[in-house]
Amino acid sequence: MTDPVKLAVVYYSSTGTVAELARTLAGEAEKAGARVRLRRVAELAPDAAIDSNPAWRANLDATRDVPEASPDDVVWADGVLFGSPTRFGNVAAQLKQFVDTLGGLWQQGLLQDKAYSGFTASGTLHGGQESTLLALYNTIHHIGGIVVAPGYTDPVKFADGNPYGTSHVNPQGQHPVDDTARAAAAVQARRVVAVAQALRDGLAPALAAQSQLARA
Ligand SMILES: Cc1cc2nc3c(=O)[nH]c(=O)nc-3n(C[C@H](O)[C@H](O)[C@H](O)COP(=O)(O)O)c2cc1C
Image (cartoon, rainbow, N blue to C red; front, side, top):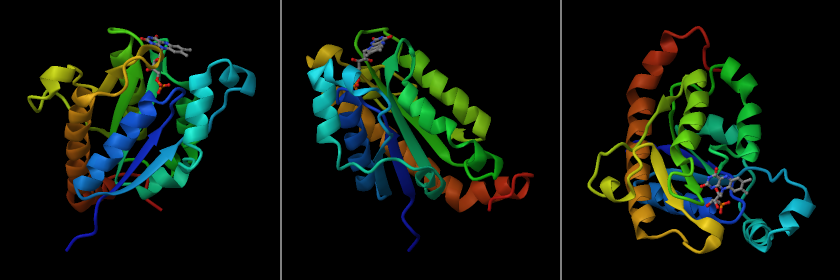
């Protein structure tokens, strides 16, 4: 019996959409046999900004029990799912800030050769979901991670229509996460768990052996 694959779901969410996608992905990864850490990154916005939007304050209060992400969660994991709402077509500063604290771990070779994938939400169709995920994947390329996009690998992916990662359109909370997004999340979670396991058990040791950045 092999050890379960370890998956970290690390997200930022202001008003709860990405948080719900994160919970869905975490649950699907557990169903696929993974040991999962669900983690939210620290909120950096000032209280005045948070209190300007009741949904923002409500989501922050509702997710206080979700442990805050730490760099160790990424080191621990064989696979990482990063989630962020679209912010002007880009990754939210809160998630970016977390990722930007990982530089020392990258230099030690502790981030490479894992499976990474992303998920997002926007307020409008064509509102920047794909550019957000591609921006996130820039970082993965730089740290030597293996990008595991869901692609059009399952019929349900033709319904949600985003081969780069699970995504959902939710302007101001009127369209909560639906069955289409949940089905896409299940495909993505299963795929990331499978690739993370294959990497851990096969390819990652071989990649590490030829890298100058030895794992600590
Ligand atoms: C500062 C800011 C910038 C945003 N930029 C975009 C954008 O470029 N395109 C878009 O469709 N939605 C944009 N949105 C809307 C959010 O991405 C969208 O409501 C998302 O579903 C929120 O996810 P959350 O509920 O997890 O916070 C923006 C929202 C904020 C607050």
